[in-house]
Length: 333
Image 1 (cartoon, helix red, strand yellow):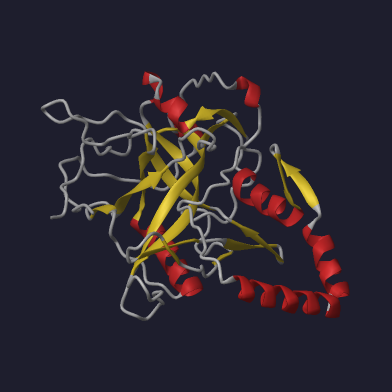
Image 2 (cartoon, helix red, strand yellow):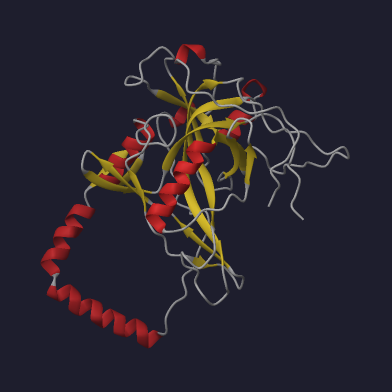
């Protein structure tokens, strides 16, 4: 954990200015073959292996399930037909309702947290916590239900108005890196305190959990917070993609984006080592400290920590209105 103190200029995020007032850089990419595809991660933030019941219990469960299936086969077939209706979205074959939610969140940038609307039409769903190893920390991946004109569609992602920091970081005076793997496995993401508070209130309403402030760096002068967003980076894992506005003068309804590469690719170019402003799309996980044998539940006096994994970034351009963190905050001892 880290203290919320470090030497830096005050941070600020003002309401979004007109697109033509944001500095737009010339972007290049080596990933032109990927076109308009979006590789979605199939990996949760925490890999979980559920414990298996004894064999005789599995047999009893199977017998029970077979009886239930025979009794309600017609209803199940109807549900299965609906679930098996597939659609294509940017190179991904997914259930039709999921494709609708993906278009809603990724393409139309609707119901994200920030400036667009006070109360996004999305519900945070409760998650089943699972324990890793023999420790007392429990993890779970959140999912979300969007109300899209009365149609309720589930999705594993939410969007937020953010600034993503791709600026270089200082190293220790002895030459040792202070922010190890920065720009590769994680980045700082800056957002308004009001935006994060809104997300936390949705977590409380949907899951019952209060959210801790651990892991955030807070600037009380500007009501701005920085969070450490994870990024997939290992071989076989889809890395987060960066999409830039094609026409900075287009209206919000006509705004479209083109993919220029991964966050890791973009951050390796000196001309792009700046702060990029736009809508970040994240998967969200929860971790709760509890006992090794007792699953924690809301109301037990524990708070949940949120873990954000950056999946994609839709950026309007580069901003100079936010001062980056340039070295690691002090550790909490």
